[in-house]
Image 1 (cartoon, rainbow, N blue to C red):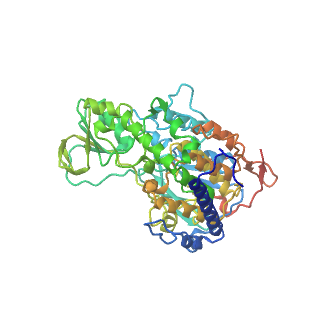
Image 2 (image 1 turned 90 degrees about the vertical axis):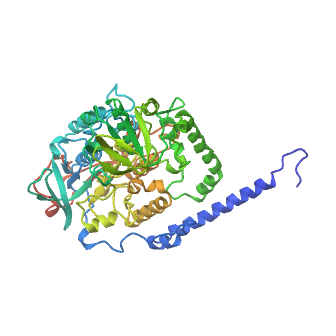
Amino acid sequence: QSLPKGSARPHAALRRALRFAASLGRYFATRDRALAARTTEDRSNFLPPLRGSTRPPSPFPAHLPASLGAFDMTPHRKRVAVIGGGISGLAAAKAFRAKGHEVVIFEQSDGLGGVWRETYPDVKTQSPKELYAFSDEPFPAGTAEWPSGDDVRAYLEAYAVKHDLVGATRLNTEVKALRRDGDAWLVTSGPTSGGAAVNELFDAVAICTGLHSKPRMPTVCGEFAGAVLHSSEVTEASLTGKNIVVVGGSKSGTDIAVAASRRTPHAVTWVRRRDVWRVPYHILGVNFKRLLYPRAQEILIPSPWRQSGLGRVVRWLIAPIVWLHFKMLETIITLQCGLARRGLIPTTNVADVVACDLPMVTDGFYEALDAGSVVAAKGEIARFEPEAVVLTGGERVACDTVVFATGWHQTADSFFAEADRSAIVGPDGLYRLHRHVVSPDVTGLGFVGANQSFATTLTSELSAEWLVRYLDGQLARQPTEDDMRRSIEDQAAWRRERPAAKAYGGRCIAPFHFRHVDELLEDLGAKLTPFNTSWLLPPDAVAIGKLLASAPAYVVTDDEGKPLASVVSSDKCSAASRKPLAATVTPN
């Protein structure tokens, strides 16, 4: 039937585009159903490689190594070794003790706080205080929006005291080896300064050493008469009055360069291999958290999570808008920060590195470059001379102190047995951890804080809560081995195709903070609805805490149904003589 005269007739090209989109949706929906019906091994072969790439064989072992033993995932009291006393260690210890488990914290330094215990001058967080806090403990009133190193250190110390974690900690104690012993873990520890080692049995182990425990120092030929430091060793005294070269383009590199320029009459030479995009704390006067952290921002970036057929079609349709969005961001940052006139324009695209390779701008950095108190140089140190360094470009720079802000080694801790290490880290260097917490091939053990993000405190807290419930068999969505392998391989396949996502051993969750948090909360049984989650606001620890509180509550109980009180430590492992206890689960 013909349309009335003057009415709008759909354009033929639009009709063809809609038919094409519908066909794509049907194709992806059929493909997803076929994938879901296959086993993990079949999926690896069924998924076609992306153009120009090859798909390596599955990294998972065909069977569980006999040395790994079994683990009783019932809610009985467990004796838990928490290795590391930083943010993630405090989160793990508090979560396990809250459920009635025994906890021993091993900390190799002389105090709690991790990397925040001793920091270089003028450091502050890259995340606002409402995001860098535990959900049950906001920063004290009056704390700056981006807390200083002293603020964070005091906050963590107060948190440890409040939750009675100090007495559960063995300071100056290093874990030297970690091995399976039947259905328990044998932990070998000893004084950091040297001395006799002690062997102890634990039912479970939480690895909370984070990503910043083993400094990476490049090897440079030649002899240097001055001081050579890692960024973690920098103090007020090591900068004052010195002639300094700082190596590293990360935020710690620019932080230290600026801090040094305020403490010495000499120009500080800042050396970096390449230029990277740096985000100002305020973009055109707007707090960056309101532009880059909201949930809506995450849908603009290709993610490691499998999408529905409709989702892929929508992403294809909005691709030009996404491209324009990031190009506008690049243009704004370039103009606001004067990157062109300073010769600091990166060769990468923001969209490709919008993860953990997108640092904040150090306060006063560009002003120091303009004033000449910080001098930028490109390249690396080719060799040392007694009173100078020679760069790869041939430039000789006189100095008496060299600071390497070159990051940290991202390898499994040396105390692991080889069988465990190879199960946790694949041959491609990517960690094989479900939810960044557990390996399906290493039982009775999990990681807390084993991911890099701008919400480390919050994600560590949720990961700790997830781990204790997983080991107690109390997750609302308790994963099977197949569930874990499928999720791990999906993430690994995506990261292999995206260079920026390989950083930190593939353990960077930025910029998908909301997606990661949502998964943990849903596994815990929290009640997420469109009415208690926001698409336009940045993550907030207190708001996330309210969602966490909606998860079913439980504590370990005795045979009479009475809750067990948490304890600091004990001399014997319960694995040898325990009997399973019931758990009281109370939906909120």
